[in-house]
Each structure stands twice: as structure tokens, then as C-alpha cells.
Amino acid sequence: MTAANVLQSLGAMLLSGGIEVVDCSGTLGPDTPLLKLPPDFAKDTPKIEIHRISEYDQDGPFWAWNWLKLGEHSGTHFDAPHHWITGRDYADGYTDTIPMQNLVAPVNVIDCSAEVAKNPDFLLSAEMVKAWEAKHGAINPGEWVVLRSDWDTRSHDEALYLNADDTGPHSPGPTVDCIEYLLSKGIVGWGNQCIGTDAGQAGGMTPPYPAHNLLHKANRYGLASLANLGKLPAKGAILIAAPLKIKNGTGSPIRALALVPKA
Ligand code: 23J
Ligand code: MN
Image (cartoon, rainbow, N blue to C red; front, side):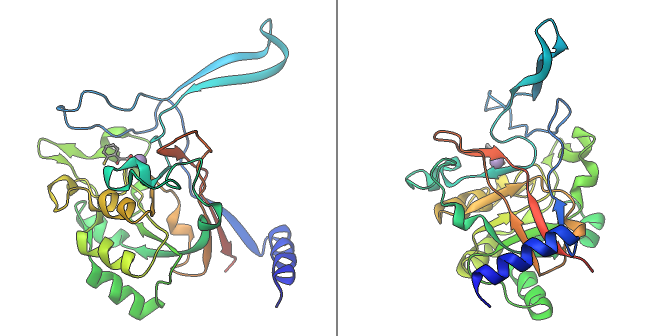
């Protein structure tokens, strides 16, 4: 099959609904949960603000528009390599320099929702990924890998979403050896349904925040606060996750879209 044939079929399948476009983003607004850093770091990302410029009124009789106050790392978002010190030197590691060819790719969805329901501190290990591959097939170079936890069901309530107590936040994520293994497979990036790409307790790992530290060191990408992963098959979907072209940006909210074959 030629590339032109494939795209013609894809176009027809999209129009007929044979391929469904699943929205993997949450809503951006003043209630979107945001990361809270430990108190030794004074600056957090600000709450999202949506300000009306006009809505068919004296400030704009025929038009409606808003302006936003919006941190790069807000809601469903992309982590670029320059976000972390380990990835600081990649010229193509900013939101405006990342190669777009990397960002539309097959997605492997590792369903850990049952485990997470029992244990919010659940960690996905390399061993578990290998067991998943034995069942569903190999993870290939250039593909996305995302951890399905159904954590997006908590996103209406920031306290529930952050799930913090006096020992810090409690939410699922990858182990160090998980990220090392996925990088050895050549993945383009890793996604999580929680506030960040790492587990709530990942500050205590070696290195701290392994998804951030190791992915970005390898010029790979992170996706945070993904939604609706329960609508995706383990394999067979295509994920489109592209950041806004922010000048020297370290990340960006995304409208994450999955192309899913209808069952
Ligand atoms: C800044 C500092 C630490 C972390 C993060 C941001 C994120 O999780 C993020 O949104 O990339 S861990
Ligand atoms: Mn981020």
C-alpha cells in the first residue's frame, strides 16, 4: 500500500466514523488542578485565569474573545526536554524546535487501573512492562507509552487529584527501571494521567523524578494529566500530542487526540 492510499483510506475512515477521534485532554479553567511544589520552592505555577475581552457588547459588538493567564505546565500538557536540567542542552528540546514527525505515533496503553484503585502509590516496573509486552506485543522504537490509571476521574477536585497528606502527594507513576527499560526500547515519550509524569512519591527515588530526569536526558518527551485512556485499546491507536509553538517553551498544554479503530 502506498502512503497516498493509506491516507485516502484514513480520510474515509475518519469521515465514516470507522476511526474514532478520542479526546485525551481535560478542560482548562480556574478549577484545573495544578502542581504544588514543596514549600522550599516559593514559586508555583499560577491558577489558570480566563479573562473576557468582549462578548457582543460595547467592547466588541459582533465578537467574543478572551485572554488567558496560563502556565506552560497546566492541565493536560507536554513536557519538553528543556524542562529538566538533564535535557537543557538539546537545541531541538524546546516547544518551538521539537521535530513534529516525532509527535504522531502509535501508543501503547498499559492498564494499571485495577492496581491503582487498590494502591494510589502504585509503581509500574520494568518487569510489569515486560509481562504486558508478552501479552500484547512488543513496544517499538518511536512509540508512545502511557500508564492508564483512570486518575482523570479525580480531576474535578484538586485535593482528590493531588491526593497529598503530610508525607506528600500519593499518585501512581513509573519506577526508575521502568523508564530505563522504555528508553532502551527507543520510545518517543511517556504519559501519565496524574499531575506530572512521575509518581507522587518520586522525589525520594534515585534519581529523583526519574521520568523527568531520564526521559529529558534522552531528549524524549513527557505527557501529564492525560484523560480518557480507558477508551483506548492496549495497542492499535495513534496518539497525536503536539505542544503550542511557544518561543523557548519548556512545555505546553495540549489537546491530546487518539485515533482509535471502532470496535
Ligand atoms: C516543576 C518542577 C517539578 C515537577 C514539575 C514541574 C512537573 O511535574 C511538571 O509539570 O513537569 S515534578
Ligand atoms: Mn510538566
